[in-house]
Image 1 (cartoon, one colour):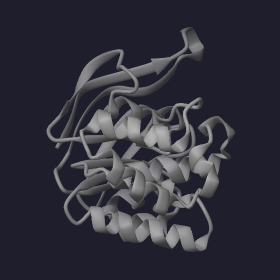
Image 2: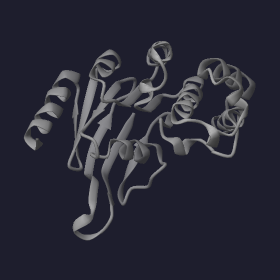
Image 3: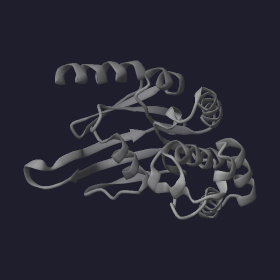
Image 4: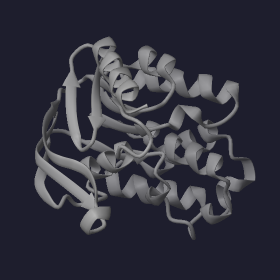
Length: 220
């Protein structure tokens, strides 16, 4: 379970200040896959970082029960000067899992070949995404934070990613950011709409999608 309590976050100052979260109060239930919807620039990725603790709110707090992943798809979760293998072992130590088991899973899953033993700073964005997703799927979390990760790789890799993610979501929840509605409909049962710093939670995904589309229509 994740609860946002009067959560506020903004960037900049004066008239140019961008409010991402405006005293948000919301609860993401346990074992529920929630689509986080909003237009480009609404602050969806920033909200995931606030939930994970990568960013600190200006005011308010995030209450978490259970384990929560880092925002998968966020390049800052990887150390550029370490190899893929070293990053994997580092994450294993942080989260208390067997490092050899995690390395074996990630090396096979991410399909990076020799690049797995090279610094992450030499990777393309897609390679970093495959590595981060592989590491996260190799660690069991109660809630996964996923930011456009199923958009990474070719068709075969995307299909493999959806299969392993679906398997993890049998026992875990997730908050998923994606512009691909078919992917959200496949994975999620609920939705939350972020608009002008306000977050509205819907138990029904289709209601959330309708709300999101109405916001887009009003602003276009």
